Amino acid sequence: MQSEAADPRIDAAAAESHEPQSPTGRQIIDFELRNSLPRVRATSPSSADPPPGPAAASLVMGTDPGSTLKIVKGEFGYVLEDVPHLTDYLSDLPTYPNPIKENPAYSVVKQFFVNQDDTVPKKVVVQKDSPRGIHFRRAGPRQRVYFESDDVNACIVTCGGLCPGLNTVIREIICGLSYMYGVDKVLGIEGGYRGFYARNTIQLTPKSVNDIHKRGGTILSTSRGGHDTLKIVDNIQDRGINQVYIIGGDGTQKGAAAIFEEIRRRRLKVAVAGIPKTIDNDIAVIDKSFGFDTAVEEAQRAINAAHVEAESVENGIGVVKLMGRYSGFIAMYATLASRDVDCCLIPESPFYLEGKGGLYEYIEKRLKENGHMVIVVAEGAGQDLIIESMKSMDHEDASGNKLLLDVGLWLSQGIKNYFTSRQKMTINLKYIDPTYMIRAIPSNASDNVYCTLLAQSAVHGAMAGYTGFTVGLVNGRQTYIPFDRVTEKRNKVVITDRMWARLLSSTNQPSFLSSKDVEEANIREEQPKQTSGEVKCMENGST
Ligand SMILES: Nc1ncnc2c1ncn2[C@@H]1O[C@H](COP(=O)(O)OP(=O)(O)O)[C@@H](O)[C@H]1O
Ligand SMILES: O=P(O)(O)OC[C@H]1O[C@](O)(COP(=O)(O)O)[C@@H](O)[C@@H]1O
Ligand SMILES: [Mg+2]
Image 1: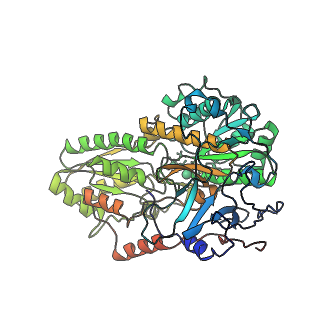
Image 2 (image 1 turned 45 degrees about the vertical axis):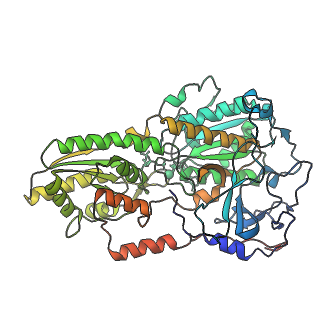
Image 3 (image 1 turned 60 degrees about the horizontal axis):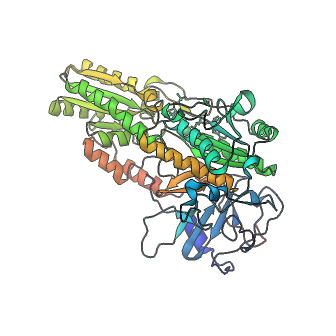
């Protein structure tokens, strides 16, 4: 569900590819970590202990001061946005054969280990002469690991709102560490980020988590706010934790990036792995977030109930509010799947109520045609209209997320008032708000499998010494994505995309957009992401 807008990073990289070519056709560029760690010279591959990835990398100023992107450039505009590795800032780390080789379940697999240089393209729709473009490192087990089983002291934390599948991810991290890598020291951090310094921890074992995937929510509980980087890293250091698995959404991954930077600054041998979670599917780059399919499937039940209520009375209107603070993916996909929805309102697509082409006019027309209708509204839709009518100030939650006014109640009351005051027709409106029901359920079968693959990919990555990454599905392949890339912008519905057009044609609702709105939406989509810092490659020895 990613729009494939042109990405300026490719042109910049392709244009600069005049650096000396290594035998493998990649630029070898020295690089210096931005936060003044000792100069690290990129070297060509050595046979003794193959480095954790392509022969060399150039560190690129990231989008935020202090962060860095590890870029490897190849021929024909190939750009690997690599993830950090412990050896970027710790030299002479010993490596060990991956214990999976001894595991009967896996030893039968012919090609179990991922090739060091496997990467996955960010864009799969290309033309004949397209540059190869941005790639991410492929996830999976490596021949050699940077932790001995008994040395691993891992922890898991869940942050932000609930989402179906949280417990499955927790379970599979623990079982993956235990069954594949023989790791038995895994701590559960309770209550989100503040749990590192203000709550108890629980020892987690495969036995203690055996059936948690059948339960919604998170056995570790969660929270918003409370991210204190120094306190968290102090706690990680004090407890001797050396692998941190952080499950959460866009806010959480920003928090994980801050933890990674501080750990790198302190030169600690601690791998930080993010697993993206959000029911809103608002995380960039990845195909979709775990739990999203379960949420869309569960939303059908609410929409079906609204449709039954509406079609069972004269001029029945069913209104269903779904989750989606800034991104309306659940509402859009639930509407497309249902076929019973006459209007879907999302945060990304402005609408208006009164006057020609407005929502009220459409409702009246639809009721005359069909005798009933169903409206699905994402909780983040119409906030500007509500604020106007209620003159309320913006409020935020403990994490800084916008606190929403209840668009479902506001819209239902508005529709009732409109038809009552104009005596146009008597309507019967039923309002259904299943939001928390949908995110508090356990994940369905396909999400359970997806959670397993995500969790195992995170474990493989941390054991192989990668760090500062979010694991995610990109074009159907598990990959390791730099934190910067998943946090630099929010994934949103593109209302000039074919998928939104499919929705409009399925509901026959008005687009509520003027030609100016469409033009502005197209411009927004084409504009490159404005980065706060300049993304640039540093040449050999220079900055
Ligand atoms: N920019 C940020 N830097 C550091 N921590 C953050 C940032 N944004 C959010 N967090 C922390 O991440 C956690 C979850 O964020 P939140 O936005 O509530 O949920 P989600 O990560 O699911 O979107 C909270 O504890 C919050 O304090
Ligand atoms: O859990 P809260 O504080 O009620 O917040 C509800 C919000 O959490 C979400 O369910 C998910 O938000 P996050 O993924 O950012 O945690 C939003 O859809 C919804 O707007
Ligand atoms: Mg979020």
